[in-house]
Length: 122
Image (tube, rainbow, N blue to C red; front, side, top):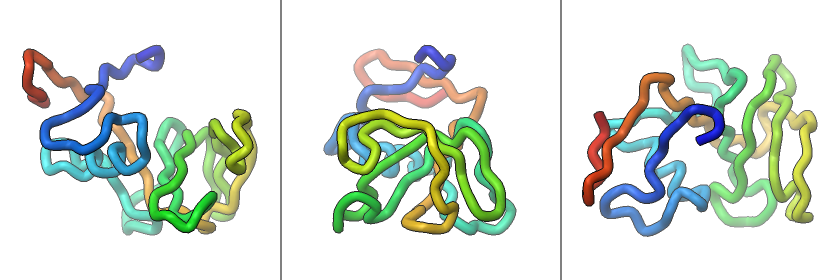
């Protein structure tokens, strides 16, 4: 919200709130949002503000961690992450761009939603 995005806490038929990685991924892949891009997807380059979704980075579970992209080049991404290395502290640092990255969420700048008892993207 401080960055200027008004996001739903939960959307219809979701099992989880947007506090969990799986919920972010599910929400970003909805037909009405289509904010998810697979790592290496043709025509997509990560940029500042994208949410990176990691795959089995901290655990053997899929989609187990996220970060915010601050910068990107061919080899590395500069990310801001909470719970770095599962040690409960936040940090800004470089990660290998191709290691354990599942994909990215890029929320459209004009995204809005309305909530009046039912999630309705505008």
